[in-house]
Length: 325
Image (cartoon, rainbow, N blue to C red; front, side, top):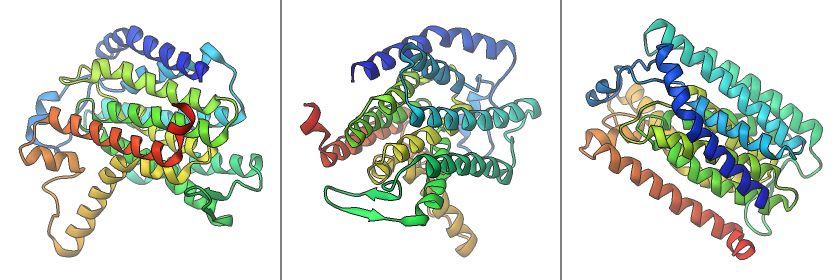
């Protein structure tokens, strides 16, 4: 617990301290955001804001880990997954910058790379797990045995959450703040679930510290955007921590705000393709709220509050409060 708290503080400090330097470098290199045409008109004023801010989060994340360096093999596997997803995001962001258009990797290219790293990660889980690996713990006393289905389902969860976090990165501070709350709660969950050394909590809270440090620069009006470099990494990392920490089911509840973002897009696409009608004014759903007249800052605050409530509920269900308070 103390180690994880130290990792959080170190990560927060480094991301804030070095964030200004990163922003200056990205600005000098002209790594600027190209705003998509498929967003509300008011977003056009954000054109030219530096992107790839996920680098700030990763700096804090790595600093927090190095400060302690007493992590186990599960944590190392998640670190590799996280950095691999960050590389995919970096390539996507770089292509957008070089082309000057809001089009990086093609969807099938990005998905192929995401599935590749998720499959490799789950192969590692298969060879390094035990007979309880394919069990999913629902509530106290309730266990779902998935058998071989566990592995492809978890691959889908990694890819799905990586993209869900990416979709949530559409308003100033939305993804960073919501992710920080989720990761702090996830850190408590995995510590309780495993009841062993705090490696996974260290990872989770290091990422949370990086997110909060980045939020210092990403709050409205944002001085830098997270980009796919950060959002793809955060989603994959959170899913990876939940998988090796054996709290997959509670994690899906915890990630409800991100799942809603993703499903709003799926519902919109399916509805338009089948009926030629749109359910929402624009997706992801945070854009629907924008076009409905809700100020951006209120939407972001609403997501933070919603995530906090969900996190509190999940921690109550898991019994964390009974252990830690």
